[in-house]
Image (cartoon, rainbow, N blue to C red; front, side, top):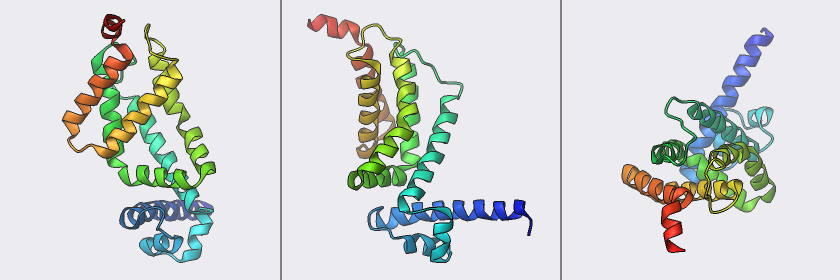
Length: 196
């Protein structure tokens, strides 16, 4: 068997284990899922897991890396604007994140569960997610009357979007309400100045 074929088979097995992990997390919850649950779901021997991933956290980290690549691709889409004075630009980001969260709800919940019980993993997730938070901060830095430094506000906005996407049910109405809330909070200079 050639090296290329072996690499292709290894990549396929790795992908199958990731997909099986998502299914197992959906059925059992991340914290209750064992490596043997994942390998059984994938139809693989238990030992095959460790050829690809050191542990369950490494599998989850690989899933996050895949999701971040997908997020980078959506940031390059034609509707993307960095002018957060424009409500449509804020809505684009909110809707993109909302749809992303809904597509990856199982992994997003698993990330939260893993981070809750493992501070080192929580820090790794923060490190991996930091470029996306910085992307939002770069947009926010262009506003004149931001209610705090751009990175802090970006962390607040992304945390709010994540928490709200995890709990809300009506997609379009929720997206519009969240857009209005964020847009007013970051760019509502007139409203804030009127209260002073």
